[in-house]
Amino acid sequence: MRTILTLLAAALTASAARGQRLNPDDYIYPVRDVPGLYSANFGELRPGHFHAGIDIKTDGVEGKALVAVADGHVSRVVLQPGGYGRAVYLTLDNGVTAVYGHLRNFRDDIEEHVRSERYARRANSVDLWFEAGRWPVAQGDTIGWSGNSGSSMGPHLHFELRDTPTQRLHNLVREGVIRPKDNLPPRIMRLHYVEIDTLDDGTPVRSRPHTYAVVREAEGRYRLARGDEAVEVGRRGYFVAEVSDRRNDVQNTFGVWRVQAAIDGEPYFEYRMDGFTHDLSRCCDAVSCYPVQVASRNEAIRLARLDRSPELFYPILRERGLVRAAAGERHRIRIEAEDDCGNISALEFEIEGRDGEFRAEADPQGTALRPDRTATMRIGNSARMTVPEGALYEPIHALPEIRQAPAAPKGVRVFSPAYHFLDPSTPLRSAVTVSVNADIPRALQLRTVLALRNRRGALVYAGGHCTNGVVTASTRTAGDLVVVADTLAPVVRARFERGADLSRARSLQFHAGDNFSGIAGWRLEIDGEWVPCDRFPMRGTLVHRFDRPASHGRHTVRLTVTDACGNTARLETEFVR
Image 1: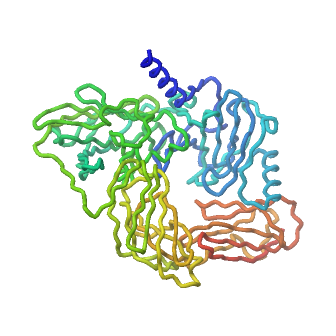
Image 2: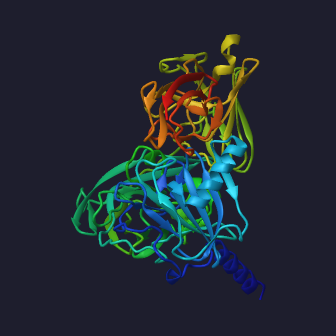
Image 3: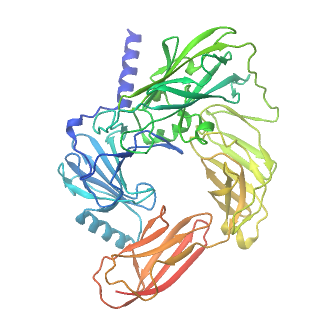
């Protein structure tokens, strides 16, 4: 009886985690006058996060009417330079929250309220929450117009549906709310095999991947380029499938919904993207084979589960997805990739156990790190890194060392060698903290931060601050860290001639860019009075939308832009309006 109750409790817990399924009949399409084409789907693997919704094409233009997909109310409005830019959140009466991102502008009454709040707070960015009675909406009501704000590479609508109590995101296509035109099965691009051994302390160590080319025999059917020759495997290993997907009438690539692996007809592993909460979004780096993923244009799905990768992504899991074969033993592997519209591709091949096996050896100078405990590593008295509990997906061995710093970009001064704690191929679920001592001129200490050596060997901004010659930063990206000072101010220029007549213009526009640390703040004044100004980081522009009637007079402009290291640029000019 106790066993039955335990199983029932587990089933109820799993059901709550999945959330209630959507009823497609409850919803209408969120944008008017578009052909229903898409540029991204739910759950795609992005750098450091799963894609949380779908991206709907808007014919390459802004200004398509966005409508409430069901009855409810506007519960939140966000305006920020990155992320979703201008975004509207609707809490629907059926217990679901709808999210619309990258808007050009909100509907007039909401836009006016946001403008008033920005002036009252003297804030370029706002995050406003509303009670149910403030902004009610009926299904089909216009709530705003599509745009290209935030971290957007082109005009489109980012759209999500979330379970309101849990904020769990729904797979809109798989649950039938959105129905793209799609009869194209996924593409299986490459296959990798990785052997694994475990050290005495429980730390897994992997071999270098063996990579196999894949050939498409027919639509949805694939084989290895090596023909019928069996893939040699060791006593314990797993496969990594590089996959991609397409849809009719667009050139974009998409993520897959499901990848399943079977041995001799028995499924032993399945990854499935049915939904997630935002706290699990970064776990895409554990679902993927991170070292392969960061260098690939495809999705590199690891057909095995890391120790701390969330269980909800794996409805089928036997021996964590490991494949075993004794010497001379043969088995047949079938790997299926399915998209969210039900199209399936399959790759089948033989494996054969080989003589010999991969054996790992621990470096006696290395440091053992575990996900369930906090650890601190040091390099002499110069540098230290604290890896908190929960930052890792599995136990690892790290070998801290000092390396030569790479060349710095223009305007950046280097004050330390490169400190290596974690290999760049290590995915991090949460941030680690690094502190480095360096001899830094007093005049530059306020401009001093940590930089990270990227995969191409270049230095990129990692952040932090300097106190008494010690630079401390938190980072969620592993790699070599260097102490640097950014000495160049941002570059700012008006996108109109001094004294230009802007009587017919709708906005005041500026170009703003930075060499290294990025723009952190900006302030625009017209005739000495603060006015709101939107930043579009993907286009490198700052824009003030005229919100007052033209006075046909001359106006002065003062724009101040500051980067993340405190360097400031100022522009003063004038226009007629």
